[in-house]
Image (cartoon, rainbow, N blue to C red):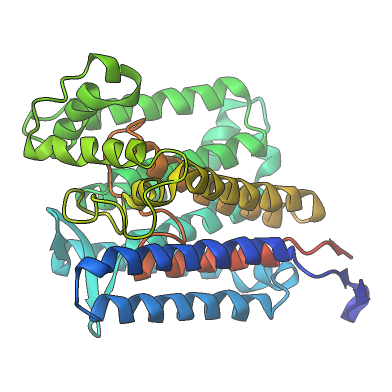
Length: 386
């Protein structure tokens, strides 16, 4: 421990977070290079190296500053509302000028660089709720329904508009992860159970309308129907002999995971990367980890994420500031839920959806945002005392 200005004491951040982050990122790049052995194009490999180095740079730049004493001043109420306005601009830009990939318009090109705004907007929303909850925590814990309405009227409108715009991008997974994170933050804030359960019920009803209230030709319904046929829970009833183009992705992922056994088939020994399994560098990279490096490697990856979550949540008690407590919980849960969804899809526990695995999956936007989140979390693990 050493003494800082203004009688503020602080220690070094939890360096194990950095170690796990670097190991997962390097392992993800190693897997990507392995997958790229069946493709002679150098451009994706160069991009991956650039993303890796820039992501590391983001983390170490963030760690140079003591955010525990600055973040509340930097990201105050006015700045956060400006960021929310910026989010609306980005989302309207996507819907009007965005690039369509795999039937979904989620990307924009900025000076030749593809960028997915929804990943950044998740973080902005978490910062907004952390600031709002820290100011209104007493009202949130009130017994009066009128106080609850006062607290959540404006946030519901702000969040609702963002969610509608993201929904039009066909990015339901982002909505589910962000909603789960916000619900967790509200629960931790101390909202009474009857109000919290009412919010959860409304959310479930809304999700049901989205998933089942539209035409059978809707792509979401198609994925739900595939999950009903090939999900992990009912696998003994499934008919694996009838393979369609739409169901191949789900079944090939399960084949890859089970084929690896305990120790895997070894580097470049898997078959799935040879166009048997699409989106193998992003949504289904966990399947390749298990196929080529086995159940042991898959388990170690999961343990790595669990340690990130536990080390981050542990730091909540270090802060006297409610804002920092809510921010730590929000970012920790955001990463945790993303991991759950990605691995859940790969193992067919959840319906297929496009969510990259933090730090492992190929892609610049997600890796940059995840790196920034990890940098903030690591910075906030400093034990602070004023």
